[in-house]
Image (cartoon, rainbow, N blue to C red; front, top):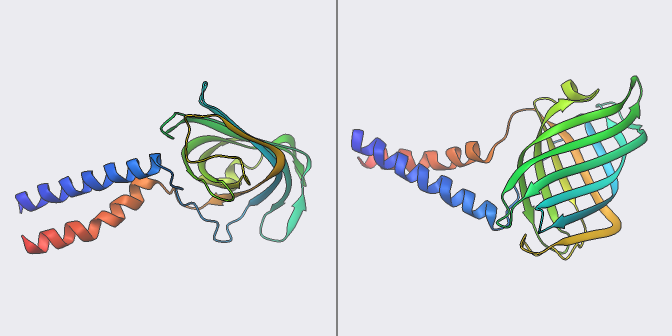
Length: 205
């Protein structure tokens, strides 16, 4: 039984390493909005990546927020994602900042978040997804425990390659920003995928 457990842990380690390698070669982390609220829709997004400084930015206009009873317009909205991504596509630190006022939320800062994870996939429409932990703003508690972001940047000439700079200044990007009810990390998903392999090896042992 001891040998079986050791083999199982070895397989789990291999799967985790392979998973991290795939993420560095162009893979979304897979956040999904299953009608979660609150939900903020953002339009007219421009993105830019500087391969020299590793700085990835997205700036746009938050239009509406849905708390579950219909969309409400955001006044004086501002939207910014600022993170670092190295040339292998690995994320460093970063923030999400959504400004504006809506209803009784009038401080001017709706949501601030700290980066947890980041994914990407080039295509006809270049896609990026993010997980943030809410750290401030009027809607911090409403978006806890995590904020998922799906960003469709349009065509930015991005080719799953962070060794060269790229950008979009057409304002064609859109993003969906929503509450994720349970922390969702790639490691947890990989552990789940590894469980059947470990179980089969235990049965054989």
